[in-house]
Image (cartoon, rainbow, N blue to C red; front, top):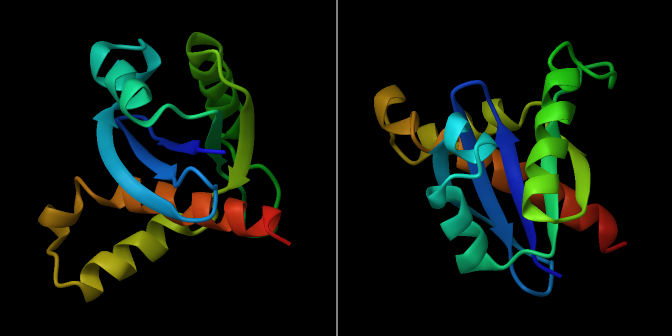
Length: 137
């Protein structure tokens, strides 16, 4: 089952996708949040290209594991996106995914400026991979 992950931010949304077997996650792109929320052509193209069967959205949690202050906003936006796509929705813990994504990109030699357009999709790939791994047990 192919899953599409969204790391929903206020400005950008990172997109990642799993392979058809649902074992490996890969970053895809970063889209403006307004386009994803409006179900604009750029986001519809991603859906058409990858044909996901499930939407997995990152949910911000505190280090203690509780839902963070933005969790309510993310839940509402994710539900709106899932309804527009006609896809079932699940949530994944996205704790520290952006920090880990920055660390990975920095190790690859990217500058802060070069990372800007990649961090969100790499973060989506990281929490999607964790979500997939938890289901392989």
